[in-house]
Amino acid sequence: MTTVTNDLRVEAKGLTRKYGDLVAVDSLDLSIPAGTIYALLGPNGAGKTTTISMLTTLLPPTSGTARVAGFDVAAQPAEVRKRIGVTFQEIVLDKDLTGREVLDYHGRLYGMKRGERAARIAELLALVELEDAADRRVKTYSGGMKRRLELARGLMTRPQVLFLDEPTQGLDPQNRARVWDYLRALRHSDGLTLLLTTHYMDEAEALADTVGIIDHGRLVVEGPPERLVAQMGADVIHVSGEGNGADFAERVRALGYVQDVQQSNGRVLVGVDDGNRRLAEIVTVAGSAGFRIEDVSVARPSLGDVFLKHTGRALRDV
Ligand SMILES: Nc1ncnc2c1ncn2[C@@H]1O[C@H](COP(=O)(O)OP(=O)(O)OP(=O)(O)O)[C@@H](O)[C@H]1O
Ligand SMILES: [Mg+2]
Image (cartoon, rainbow, N blue to C red; front, side, top):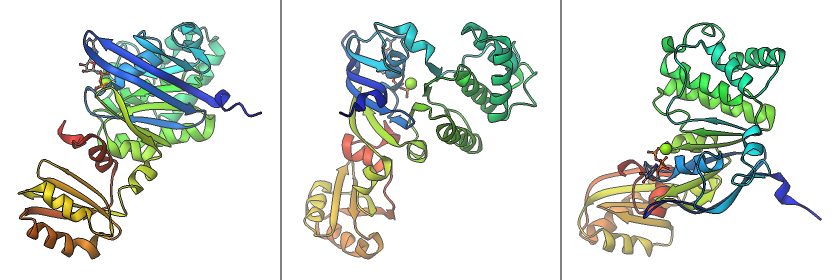
């Protein structure tokens, strides 16, 4: 007999959180196996932080259940907390402490012995490349350094599951890429399970084994990013302009090589087998539908296109 459930580090069923009439997280089901990276991708207000808060025992669910590292978040919160690390969306560091003190304090809070703390701190400072800055006060750190210190703090107690709420928010591309490298390295070294939230589709694509797209508290689609993207077609032709987009989309849909068509607000996305080869005919069809093209381009599909397909809105204009 196989017991697959034992390998799940995060398991949510019907997880729901309401604020008055607002359903911030709506019947969320999650199954995240050990040693994988899961990215919850969604726009502002989608319910990402609320989900993390429930899974990390900081916020009681209104209904539904969740188990993290094998324990129920509502019934066994202390057991859950022993096995997780968290980094918050807003940086919460005591700025008068040095980086080393931040890590040491956190280790003491969790009952780690002095020698164990020192060894772990050395390891983590090396991982996030803060050795040179370790004895400076946090208030002298750059935004990127603070994020890296937070990551180290989240890892201090050797968690089984690390929750990262928007781990690269506000970082420049270089610092984002560094954080991505650390996270990838972690998965390969420790078999750690990571659940991160992001509103950057490139981040989800770059890191995640599984992406869940969340919108208005609901998980609208889930899967390996490459599979979600492949369903859009090999290429996506982006057409924007004025006229009857619905009629244009309808005509395009009838073409044999078209794999997917999405249409909203003067924007039509056409998933095709070969963008450059099909471009001319798509433009001709637009003309015959009376759709006046202002801009057209061919690109590889992205998770942004997947988001539009499932929500009817572009990830960037919500
Ligand atoms: N304490 C609260 N009281 C009332 N409403 C709340 C509270 N916290 C969150 N909300 C609402 O719940 C919804 C989900 O918020 P949440 O912070 O989980 O979104 P998010 O996906 O993390 O957004 P962002 O990308 O901006 O961080 C939003 O509509 C928000 O306004
Ligand atoms: Mg948030």
